Image 1: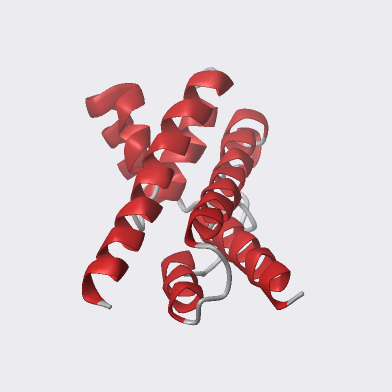
Image 2 (image 1 turned 60 degrees about the vertical axis):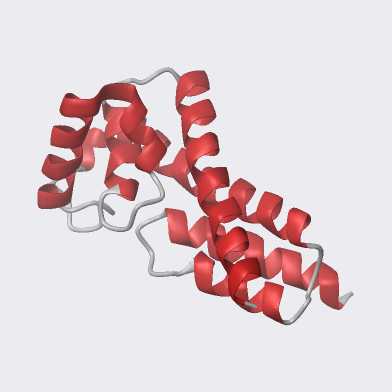
Length: 145
């Protein structure tokens, strides 16, 4: 049962980290790897799934709730939104590979929704970027243990 709870913790942490709520799924992943709480491949898959799911929420907010972007409860502030739009204008769809980067990643996924990026393309590129990030964290952890 402890292993299952590790996967749940990883999923929730990764999901929240992909939204504008504070969180650091990388720290949780390394902690779970260090404590041998679950199989590394499954932890990486669960982290990727949760993080992508959080980005899908951001995409949905951008797609369907942009009329509320001036409200205090809206999760992305105007300055971050402007930076993300500039990234998106400069690098296009491939900027979504950076959706894992702190500060710009969450707004990028929101902008993708605002700009009506087709969901299939969004999902594919964001999943690749986030999976590569968690794989890199795992590789770095293996190297330093």
